[in-house]
Length: 433
Ligand code: URA
Image (cartoon, rainbow, N blue to C red; front, side):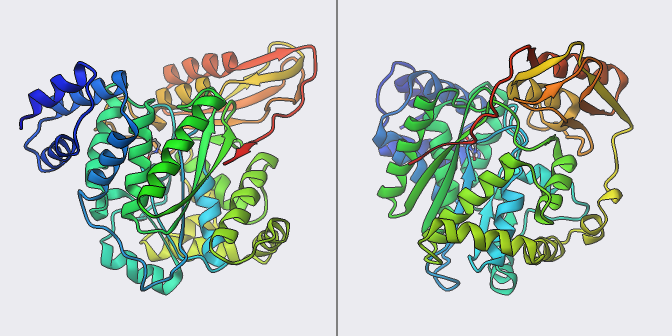
C-alpha cells in the first residue's frame, strides 16, 4: 500500500478501505506521510466526500492515533460537549464550569480557531499562565480533585486530528461534512465521555449554512457515536449573527466571566439553559428540563459556577487575579467606535463578516504557525432587531494597527444591514435532534 495510490483512489471518487484510511492516519501521524501528500488527500476528500463507512473508519483511526481516556474510574455518566464552530462562541467557557459545579465530571478537549471561527483553546490561552497542554495523568487528577479539566489536544488525545485540523485551516478544507464529523467525534471518543452533546451551528458564520446541511452533519455524528457505543444528541443553533457581544480571545473570556457572575445576553442565556438542562438529563441528574433550568439559574446566582471557573483557572496554572479583576486583561492599543450612517433597525448582522474582520485584526490565523493577538477583536453593541439612530455607536473595533483598524471599521459597518422595518430577534435554538 502507498499514499500515492490512496490519493489517486480518492481523487477518482472511489471508496477507501479501512486499511487505506488507517495507513494514511498512522503514516501522517508518525511523520512518514508529508504535509503536501496529506493536503492532497484531504482536498480529494473535501471535493468527493466519503461514505458513512469511510467516515466511521476515519473517526476511529483518528481516535486511536493517541491515548484513549478511560473515565470509568471517575464517573459512569460523564457528558462532553462540542460546537461545530462559530463567531463569538464562548459557550464552553460558561457552560462547562456550571456543569462541573453541579456535579458532572468534565474533561473537555477543545481546538484552536479554525477558518473564521474562534477556538476555545485560543481563548483560554489569553488568560496569563493558563496551560491547555497538560498530561493525561494530570487531567485525571484534576477531574478527581475539582471535577473539571479544559484542555487542548497536546495531551496525546487524537493527535492525528490535531495535525489534520491545522492543515485543513490553511488549505480551504474546513467546510466538509466528513472532515468536521470525524474531527469532532474522534476527539470526543478519545476523551472518554459516554454522553456527548453537540452544538451544530447553522448560518452565515457557521460551516453549515443551511438547516438541512446542519441536520445531515448531525445525523452523521450521531451515527458515528452509535457505532462507537456513545449516546449523542445534537442541538442546532443559529449562527447568522455572533453569539453574545464579543468576538476575539480575551474579549470573550471577559464576557464569559461576566456571564458566570450572572450578567449575560439573552442569546447566551438561552443556549446555556438549553444545553445545560439536557446535559443534566443525560448525566442522570434530572429528567425535568424546566426544573433543570431553574437549578442552573440558582447555581449561577449562588456564585458557585463562577467559583468553579476560578478553581479551574488556578488548577491549570492561570493567574486568577485576572478573572477576579477583569480590568487586568491588557486592552488593544487602538479602540475605534463604528457608528451608523443612518437610522433604522438592524435587520441582519453578518457573523461571517464579523468573523473575517476579527481574523484580519489578528484574533485568528491565516497560516497554521501564525501567532494571534489575544487583545484584538470586535464588541457589538447592536444586534438583529435593535433600533439604531444615525451616528449611534453600533460596535467597537479593538486593533493593534491603525490600518487594520480602518479596514475593520469598514467591514464591521458592512456587516450591518439597517432598514426602516423592524424585525424580530432571531431564535437561537433551531432544533433538537
Ligand atoms: N470543531 C472541530 O473540532 N473540528 C472541526 O472540524 C470543526 C469544528
